[in-house]
Image (cartoon, rainbow, N blue to C red; front, top):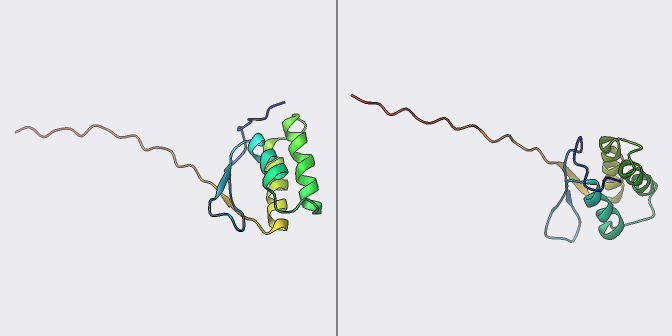
Length: 101
């Protein structure tokens, strides 16, 4: 079981209604916690599909990105705003050559 799998899992930012802080889901463990502890409704069809997909991803039966698709559908079903978190590469700074006369 790979609770902290991050490979091929694009982070998702979630804005849950009534909560002032946004949550960023980076790993399967984060997603499992959100689904089981913080999800606003646990009776939707997409929610049940996402929980099953999370278990399958943690068990290695499906890729984390396949789970992510189910997770996003469940968020949509629950009225949760989901944003893709884009991580920018850190620019490489080159030393500035000093001008000498």
